Image (cartoon, rainbow, N blue to C red):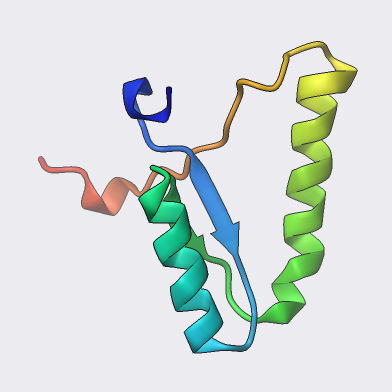
Length: 79
């Protein structure tokens, strides 16, 4: 189903190990997600809040588990 989406869903990651981040990036891209490096491990506190929002939208508001976030970078849109 991921391939049928108009945009690739976002897979956020953070950490201190470039090797581990590379591995996670490859896994995310292999399953059709757009990997976005959110920085060092200090960013984990922000990613946790994104997870809570996702749960609230999916479960708390009845949106279901088929939703996903996307990151739009307007600087990469052709003119």
